[in-house]
Length: 118
Image (tube, rainbow, N blue to C red; front, side, top):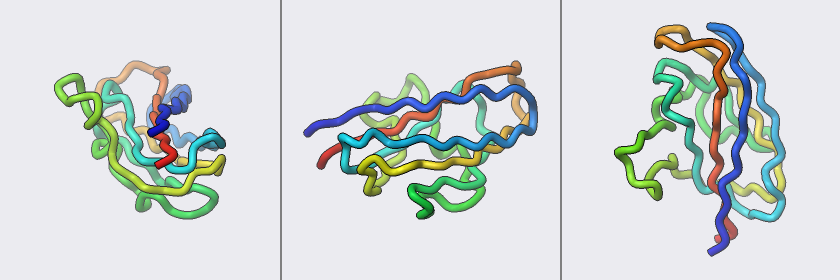
């Protein structure tokens, strides 16, 4: 099984920022099989939207805490499972920062996409 982790990084400069992310998924992989967000940002943020080529992947205002894990979770279990057709499609995410957590700005939002051909 051919797998890859694609990293999307975006700088968040201020509290309450809404950041639009638009990235092409690696065209050498057929499926988006999982998504994860680095846990250091806290758990009070949300994805206002997450689509692939305009099709909703996660519901509006999806809580980022569902996409996070920590070092206590086995690496193979750190991704929120999905089964979406990728094939070089564009993923678009609107990320809503929330200052409920103690965070230093700016910080780098890291979103990991698990890609597969099976």
